[in-house]
Amino acid sequence: MNGADTAWIMVATALVLFMTLPGLALFYGGLVRARNVLSVFMHCYAIACLMSVLWLAVGYSIAFGDGNAYWGGLGKMFLDGVTADSLSGTLPEVLFFAFQMTFAIITPALIVGAYVERIHFGFVMVFSGLWMLLCYAPVVHWIWGGGFMADGGIFGDVGVKDFAGGIVVHETAGIAALVLAVMLGARKVKNKPPHSPTFVMLGAAMLWVGWFGFNGGSQLAADGGAAMAITVTHISAATASLTWALWERIKYGKASLVGIVTGTIAGLASITPASGFVGPVEAMIIGAIAGVMCQEAVNFIRNKVKIDDTLDVFAVHGVGGIFGTIMIAVFGEGSWTAQLGALAIVGVFTFVVSVVLVKITALITPFRVSEEMEVNGLDLEEHGERAYEFNS
Image (tube, rainbow, N blue to C red; front, side):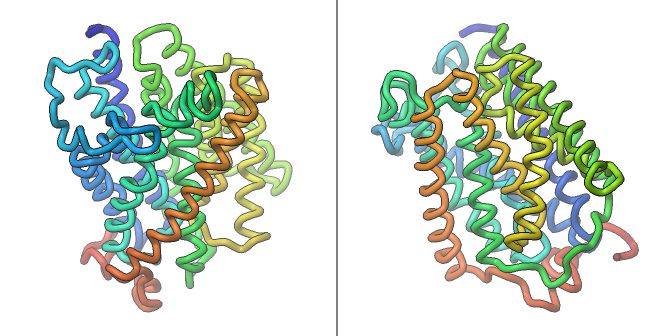
C-alpha cells in the first residue's frame, strides 16, 4: 500500500460523491419548475443510496470480479474475501471499491435529467437499479475490469482508451437518457424557464470541483499523471464555457448564466475520456469545440428531431463523451479501430438493454404519471412536500 496514493483516492472518492450530492441535484433541480425541484432532489438522493447498496451486493463483483472477459462473476458479492489489508494495486481494495462506487452512483443519476417532471418515483428506482447492474457494471468490466475491450482483448495489445468514463459513464448514460426520453414521451408543460438559475450555477460549480476527483482520481495514484489530469480537466471546462457563451451571444445576442455553466459541463464531459492522455493545448482544443458542438446538439435534439430530453443529457453528456473518446484517436493517443469499435459496441448494447429494461420495469411499476399529476407537479403528488411556500 502507498500512503500518498491512498490519501489522494480517499479525497477523490469524496469529491466524486460531492458531484452527485449535492452538485448534480442542484444543477438539475434548478433547471426544472419550482413544483418539481424536490422530486429531482429525491431522485438523486435515493439513487445514491440504492446504488451504494447494490454496488456492495453484486455490482462491484460484476464489474471487477475474476470471471471472464465478458462478466466479472459473483465471487466478490458483498466484498467476500476483501479485508482492510487486501490491495488493488497500491490501494486498499476497499478504497478502490468505494471510489468506483461513486461512479456507479453518478452514472444512473445523470440519466435523471432526461425524464424529470413526468415519471413515477418507483419506476426511477427499479429501472436505475437494474440498469446499473445489467448495463453499467458489465461495460465497466469490459473496459476497466480487464474485459474483452481492455489491453490484449479484441482490439489488440492497445485496447480502448477511456481514462475516466467517456464511454463507460457518459455514452451509456446519454444513450439510456435518449431511450427513456423517447419512450416516455414529451412533457405536457414545456418551455418553462429554469426556476432557479442560481441553483444551476451552484450545482455546476460543485460538479466542476468534484470533477477533479473524477478525472484526477482515475489515475489511482498521487503523481504527475493525476496532476495533469486535473489541469487539463480545468482547461477544457473553462474553454468550453467561453465558447458556449460566445456562440450563444453570436446566435441570440445574449450570453446566459445557464448557458455558460452548461458549457462547463460539456467541456468536463468531453475531456473525461482523454484527461489521462492529452496535454493542456489539446484540452483547450477539445473544450473549444465542445462548447459549440454540444450547444448545437441541444438545438438539434430539441428543435429538429423533437425529442424531449428534458435537461439535455444526451446532447451534453452523450455527445461530449463520444466526442472526447474520438479525440483520443485524433491526437494519436489511441487506435481509431479501438475507439470507434468500443463506441459502437457499447452504444448498441446500451440501447438494447435500456429498451428492454424500460419495458420490463413498466410491467412492474407505473411508468409515466397522469396528466393531472404532471400539471400539479411531482413534489406534492409523489412526495407530499414542496420546496417553497409558493409554486410557479
